[in-house]
Image (cartoon, rainbow, N blue to C red):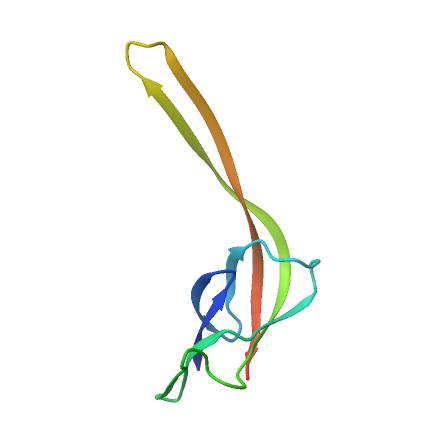
Length: 102
């Protein structure tokens, strides 16, 4: 069984026991969260598509930890002008384990 769920503005295909990285969520490590924006479910070949969401279906998960992504370097330059700017950025993520789809 799997579901397509919208978490923090992004869509993820999730299954029970799967660990995914999503944009940073509120809550401490070990906290339980529920996502009710379920767009599609598949149970033994029976597909249910929501309009826009599947009613009374929720995905429960546990927050494992908050982590940072890899550094992304942003380098800007204008030739022959002496203009160079170098910036870095690390995105904040939350590691979530899917406990069940109900």
